[in-house]
Amino acid sequence: MENLTNWVIDPSHSEIAFRVKHLMISRVKGVFGTYQAQVQTNGDDFSTASVNFTADTASIDTGDVNRDGHVRSADFFDCEKFPHLSFQGKGLTKVDGANRYAITGDLTIKGTTKPVTLNVTLEGVMKDPWGNLKAGVSVEGTINRKEFGLEWNTPLDGGGFLLADDVHILCEVQLLKAETAAA
Image (tube, rainbow, N blue to C red; front, top):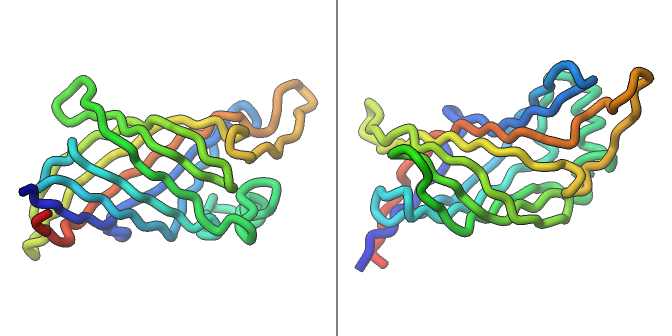
C-alpha cells in the first residue's frame, strides 16, 4: 500500500512567468496571476509526482495595460475563446544532480496540445513556522509560441521581427502539503 500525498500551490509564494525577446534586443516578462495545480506524490518522494496545472489566460500581466490587452486578444491567447492553458505531466525522469528532473507532458495553449519537456529542480522540503510542510520547485523550459497558435508578429525596418518565436518558461513554485491518503 502506498501513501499518496496531495500538494497544492501556495500562490503567495509562487510565480508562473515567461519571457520573450522583444525588438531583438531585450526581453519582456509576463506573469499569470491566477493558476492552480494538483500535484500528487508517493509519500514525499517528488520523483513519483503527477502534475496537473492550469492558468487563467486573462490573468496575464506584462506590466503594461495596453500590451496585456493585446496579449489577451485573438492575436495571442484569445482569452474569451480559450480561458485556460494547461499542462498535464506524464512523468519525471532523473537527470544530473541530486534534485534535478525532466518532466514530460502535454501543454495546451489556445486549443493546441503538444508534448513538451521542462527542467525541474526540487529546491527542498521544509516545515514553515506554523507546522505546514512546504516544497520548493523551480521549473524552466522553452517553447515555440507559433506551435501553439500564438503567431502574431510584425517585421522590423532593420530586419527581423518584433517578437521572437521562443518563449522561456520560468516558474518558482512553493507547494503546500494538503493531505496524505492510503491508496
